Image (tube, rainbow, N blue to C red; front, side, top):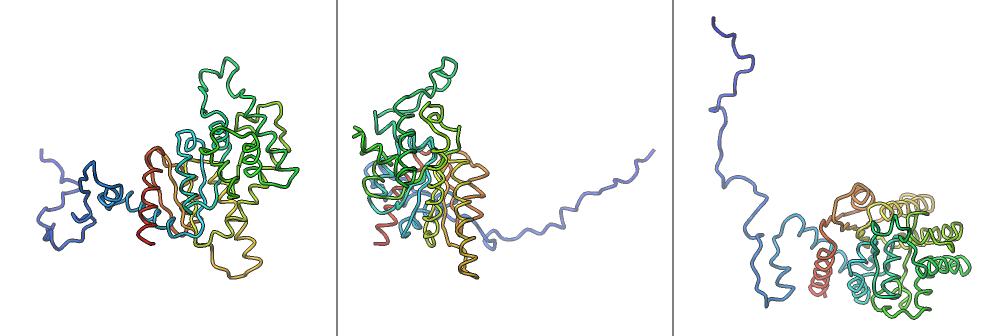
Amino acid sequence: MADAPDPQPPLAPGRFHPAPLGGRGHLVETERFARPVGLDDSVGAFLDALPDFLGVRHLRALARAIAASPRTLWGLGGHVIKVGLGPLLIDLAARGHAQGFVLNGAAAIHDCEVALQGSTSEDVGGGLFEGTYGTADETGRLFAAAAARAVESELGFGTALGRELLARAPANAALSVLCHAAQHELPVTVHVAVGTDTVHMHPACDGATLGAATHRDFLRLAGFVEGLDGGVYVNVGSAVILPEVFLKAVAMVHNARAHEQPGAQPLAITTGNLDMLRHYRPRVNVLERPAAAGHDLAGQHEYVLPLLRAAILQAAEAGA
């Protein structure tokens, strides 16, 4: 018995018409391939030899934007500080490539502990069930004193924290972003959600004072963002707190502008996001929604940030 006809006959291969390779448009050309460099070559030669595709293009574009920017604001998560990148951020500030810093609570804690004793980051698993995790007395008292100082003197939390640190004459002040900001009167803000940081467990912590101090920093951040037209915001290693805070600051500024300057154009902010993983909030709240141009650099902070710093210096030299 014969089978019924195939309900879906195949497409005849002869109906497909090949075309010459040379007549096709291409996304990849050999002129943009990587070139080997030697151990004696300069950092600039290394950067020039990188392949001119995808991530490297974002690296170069973000570096050029920062090098040319009148104002660049750096948002920092805790991991960035605890893997030893504070000195590079301080160097960028000293060279005029950072006009302010935005820290979450973890970044501020690690920065303070580095300044005070040159070490930080405890073994959470090792101390969690022994009752020793998050019990550092000096850190907790420092944050409580800074929050009180911020409220009493109408200072931002970050500014008060930097000044409290300097008052203790820490041995490693030269490695502290907070100390550098306080010494050079750079804007620095610290943004916390109550209960997210170890210092909130300390008996000296007062929730009302902490909330008032960090809320003032939110408003200070909005003030900085208002002047960020044509500038750059870089989020480094914060997946939730800082992307949310930044977006709300942008929203406040545009709300004020809409009422005070009807028809005003949106702020033209170039943004960057550096992180080990690609997260939802940094993508939409930093790179997409508020940005005129957004650049995503994925990888370990320990090598991505040094690479970006080198690219910024190269771009600044080229534009000088």
